[in-house]
Image (cartoon, rainbow, N blue to C red):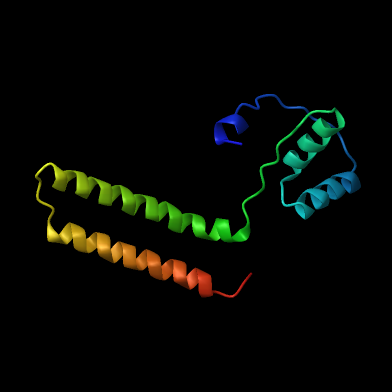
Length: 120
């Protein structure tokens, strides 16, 4: 399911539960790796005979690696700009390339450190 489909959900339904019921819902949702709202929505839709695709919560590794992936996207954008500039006959200075290489090396070391870190 794409992100745009998720954002199409625009109405909210509220219902009351006891603290024990709420705790049971949260525990059941956590056991299958989804949030309590997604769990409640899919369970209710299933009971109503409707299909409800489940979008799993990001796991711990995805959460830890997200900043590195964001930085990688920035590096890729910088590289794309330098490449485009060079292709139209522009000069790409050595300092820009050196900074990009250094940033790439730092990112690589950060990702390798995450890989080797003890699990939480």
